[in-house]
Image (cartoon, rainbow, N blue to C red; front, side):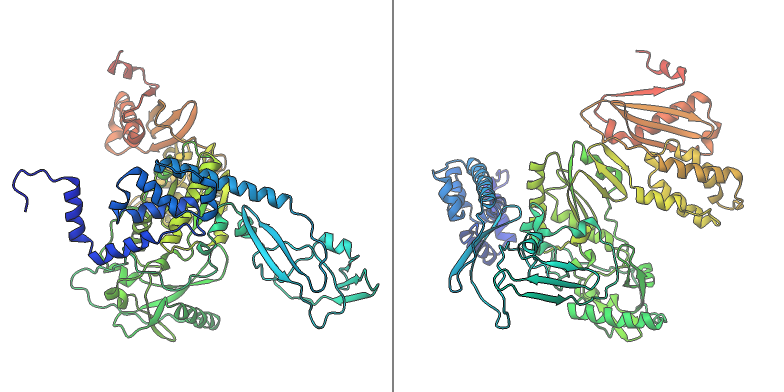
Length: 636
């Protein structure tokens, strides 16, 4: 114990903290990792990040800047170390120099690829080599002896370029076919090849492969190996999840209302085709370790839900009985508009969608029996977080925020399992994208490549189109609104207004326009679809179709706020440098309908300042109103 009044130093606090929270065995393990750390095949940036993280466990080795730089220098790749040359006394200077040298070496390799000489046909016993540049800065050196298939009768030489496995043995392009006088007959599906040495002509019949025609997204057509930075992280984009996720700091917990008894429901009946699909998906999830047979007293029925993006059916569980008795997790999900406010000045975008995102988190061991679900083929329970559980989004959002806490609001936006990386230049984007992918690799979070897109000037994200021009409505979502049929019930009205209301910031006087429809949703209101409702319905569709692109707010510049009030409601517009940032509106409350005109106009100003407080607080703003009596509130 320290005497009363003793001021604890940082070293004393750190020593006490480590003694209490970090066991010596863990510190020793991390110190061994630190001393064995080498760059190897990773980039300079990844090596520096690992060095900074592990060096915290051996502060005596990096207590001065020169010692820190010397230790970092010793772990660099030998080739890079040769080019660095001199000793560096500044850690920052060394890091900058290493990144620059790494970039220059990549440029040299690029030049070598361009100058690659055409190979000549080797003799039958010769050993031959080629150096091939993998797209985007990766060099492969292949050493191969010429081999001849025992059944072959003719030799055809080819100048090969090595690619990663694409599921086929070799691709013979137009140059090779021209050299060997290859004739293609599409009608008879035959290939005629004439040997240049023996003069023999061979005919090859191509088999017919019956295959359903399909379309692919542009992102799916891209190969990981051709995308800058991404080609260094192929393990982040597996075809399937490798199995159970690792133990994490976050486990999915199911807290129940006190006094709750186990809930059990009979399985739903399924059609024969669904039963076949059920067997297949149950076996797949058993093989991956996501589920296991259960003897739990709990049980909710399983069902299938149509997949929107790629077709097919997803096995889900109707957890509504369990959700009713589950204590709700109040972890906040970010507001979409607030997320987009961070994109000021961004010009380059990449979006990453995690593969089966919920399966990345294990369920707390004591809560596994609560996830039991019943099927025609028995009961099973989930070992990973399943679709349909009430607190699933909150837990996943908490995990993602924990993983990317240092990057949030700097160059990354995260909404549940959707990740957006944004940068002001391509050079910045290379660094930002590498950091994000390295984090995914470190935490064993896997993405679905077909749903990802990289190095875009314009990207679709969370129902919006993002670009350097600002934020616009996603046309595919507008199409859903345009195809909406006339609502026939109050529930359908609420559904339509919910979808259209998602984009209300793009629509001037949204509340005023939608008022005839919202009046039908009031308690005890009689449902009567009037001409005014039809007009409002069609007007909202039209306004969404021609919704403008909104600018991103820059808090370093002044804002203009335009306010208006009428008997139909309050309306406001936030503008900066002549471009609209957002529209807002609301209907009058009952007591506000009795306000005199000047009070209504003032209410519009007050409400505008409230909803845009986070933009205006501490910044210069000009407020405009069409009611002249307001100028007497502040005559100067």
